[in-house]
Length: 121
Image: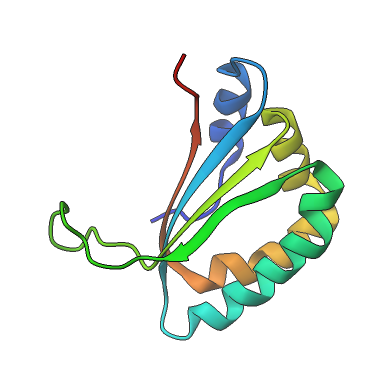
């Protein structure tokens, strides 16, 4: 199961850009002990990379009671991050400094959803 964006996925993400800001939905399922590693990644994200690329955390929280979900579909955490554009997110992911810390995220997760959202009119 992939937990990081891949080249072709990023290409399609940019090709489908409707313009304007993007809110990225992150659904996270941690490995045993993964929360600590993810916390290190989140610290670097908040202190360095979001300011560098104009991103803002809109919401971060733990999953709780799943009211409507099939077995195994409850998530450990949810994160909503807004970027000024899809390109800003893509540039961040390509940043060598970011790539140096992304292993913390990769190792922390056993499953993830990373999905761009488009606001309703």
